[in-house]
Image 1: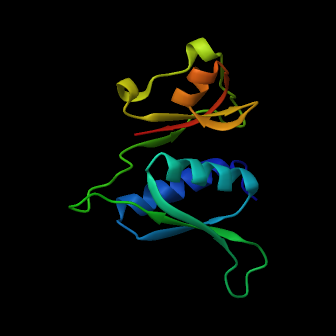
Image 2: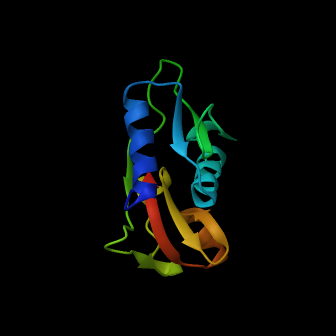
Length: 133
């Protein structure tokens, strides 16, 4: 059993992009699906599909990774911030600006999972799940 399934998902994405894989499979959950859809909306992942592999009891999320014209990584850095042992909550005023606005901090708010720009615009804070650029 994993103690931090979100960190596992981020690690799978990080490892897959570094080895230039086309897709990566992640055990599915509703939260992970929301996170994956946010990564698609922000342009870091090409697509996400919830499916069940043959002979597997649980669903998986199949993320189609995105690369540049010369196969350079779109996701240069991805890091878990709030962990089970150390939660990181911030107010709307203290939301981090990642790479001077070129990166994204994923924030879990009362309005759902939001990128830092949108959370700042709505004036809501929350738990900083991860950052990426």
